[in-house]
Length: 283
Figure 1 (cartoon, rainbow, N blue to C red):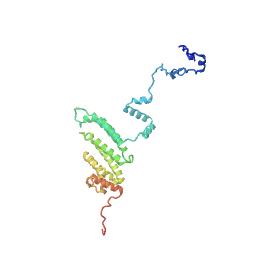
Figure 2 (cartoon, rainbow, N blue to C red):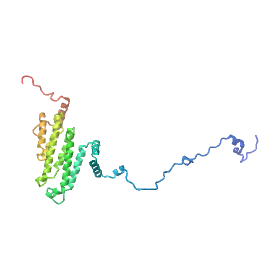
Figure 3 (cartoon, rainbow, N blue to C red):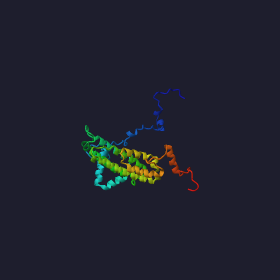
Figure 4 (spheres, rainbow, N blue to C red):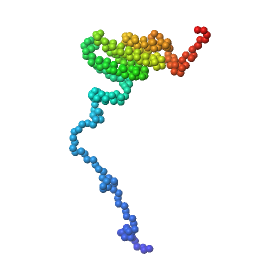
């Protein structure tokens, strides 16, 4: 071994033999975005901007419910077949939604009353007549929807009639007999609706739901608030409950809710009256 010191410039990499035997060093990797031929295309902005109509979904977003309903009514009037499709595709109105619409008409009626005048006078009637007719017309349109045979569930029908009758209670009373005819006619029509639903409910379960759900009490209160204009309906209810031992006022001689629930359970499982003593011997 030679004792000669290595010079600083004696680099093994400078040796031709070393350069031939060593592997070439890899070239630095360029990022993907910087590699030639792989530049991400940039979408150019439109240079020619012109006006144009809104797409239909965007246009519908700008319409209020009243505007949209008006447009739909106009289209249905012009194309009745479209109206039939809407009727078949629309969800069935619920009692809450129908009573909500009637409540809106009630609010419009109250807002139409003039200030500083008797609310029962002829002048007040003329001011609110249009809003009053709108409410009565809506009431006549919604009521048949919740009556049999269109509505098969008596409890749903009764729930609607309960709210609709309250709407009639709130109608104003006028000084003129002629002006009061609107409210009287509304009571007569709603009484016939009650009778129809009571008869239908009596066919299902013998009318037990009418008594146990407290509809006899509700109808009696409506009759009292109407000044006896629902007597025909209360008479129909008493007739339906006579077989159950109903009293003249339509109430069963039960003392508490637990008693009513017990009777209902016995009727459902077929054990009602099984504990009653059976008479033996000559009659």
